Image 1 (cartoon, rainbow, N blue to C red):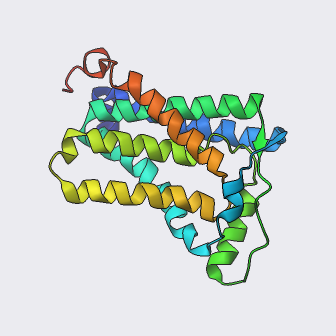
Image 2: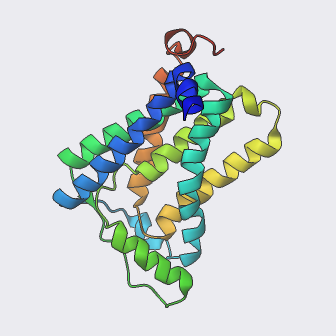
Length: 215
């Protein structure tokens, strides 16, 4: 424990990750007390088939998202702060929109069969009802990771690592549609939100303001 305390004193930027606790509490509070008033839908949603295999890349997000944050925390503090700014500001904007304009879906169809993956999709649906969907936080955070990693000096010249990023990103994105967790509009709004937040993220002097030892 003394070593942990010393490390945290030397790396105060690590406390930014405490935002996750606020986000989870706020998100699940909204799901409990705010009912959807506006259904999100477009014609393309009707053309997208259900695929229980999409659960695999969808679930991988729960590793990819925190893994990317903590990897940058230890490897590049400036990009870590950029990612946190884009991701956490985006999450906050989404939470405010969910409270002011509660959105939901009516896309989910009965599960086609009862294999293991379909049962797990059923479990996911029971935990994550079709509410608070636009913009998609799943997508906004995935887009934020893609933007920061592809521009990171850590991946400069590492085409294999960049190929991984540009492969994981569309797979996670498509998974939200193939599982009927989100509408096309949710996906577009989530990606656009991170793209807009990336503009100030790359203009703020993170190194001087928050992390003197960073580049």
